[in-house]
Length: 472
Image 1: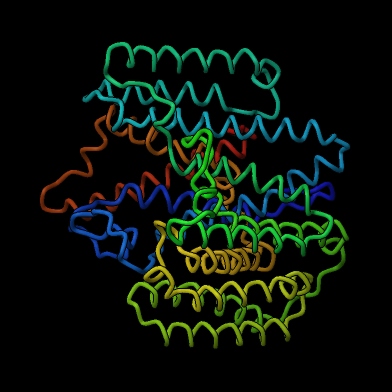
Image 2: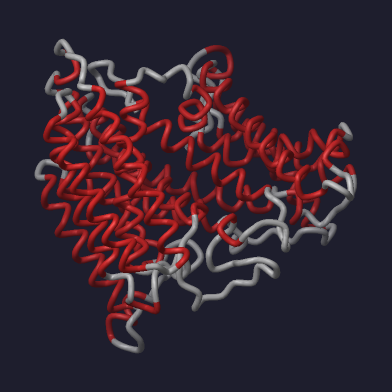
């Protein structure tokens, strides 16, 4: 994200890119009894991959969604803050938020119907229809910054809508794929609800960022009481005039979005104050390494410990690493020090309360998300952001992280490119046969997953470099 003073928050782009590419990779790895359980969602273990709601723990795959949500929250102060400073009125802001919500909801419905494996056809037709849907989605949602396409965008958007309408109408009336609004991508629909609610919270509380914790507390109380059984709060929590489109249950993820918003405000305020326009002295490398080591170690140890259910020693290790992080931060000397010192109490609170609330609801779980899951992954997301801040702003790895930052800038394109562009091309060209051999099937499928992820990253980053984005 960028500001008026010209600073680009590359670390946030990189974290968002990592989340979306982790999502692509985890969706393409072989299933069954091919890989160990920590390669999948903790509650959908091999070999059957059937949902086990009572199975506690998390894996690296369970970090993907909250990390992406955190990034969306952290981007809100940059996008809306810039609009406010340009003098855009509250009514136009409100209209823009509703349009964005509607666009994301539409994308959730279209992208779900466009997946190759739900289209109801097989063989080359399956992949050709997927490519057709990809073309329609690009025309409908693309937002190039300049050139002929940008100047004639209404006509291009109309063409994309017509392509998708004809495609899905044909499949619907031939009774191949009935089109229903209630069939949607749950991830995108949750994002739509939280983008709208998070933006409203930011607009109401942006001038006093510490009041964000009032909203945080209210949401936590609603979430906990709404899941506590048959009670009057549960009646409110479960009510929706349009259940498939709007749900209080989706808004539990505001417990991840709000820490993201707070982080975005802190960073943006520092940028606007001119913090990064001052001469920067070289930070002492040993303390930078200590910050990097402690941040990464807290993330890795937390995930491993929660997965193997070694709770006390995991909590103790995380606490000691937080002390090490604080020590290194105190000795550090860099403009980012002031920002991270502001964020440290939040990091510490989220991580510690995430562990202390872990026994609730039978242990930490992604589905249905427990309080521990929402709090802990929020804290780990901030630590991950700090890792990328060190890589981009201290180690100057911006060019090395081009695929991550480019994918993060073009997340909508990256989200659908694997299923609707890369896989169809691999199947239609016959290249997919290179990854099929009965003696090495698991290894080759892993290679295929890696290559698909790499190609998605390259396509998204290349489009970003050409300033060609998919947005709503």
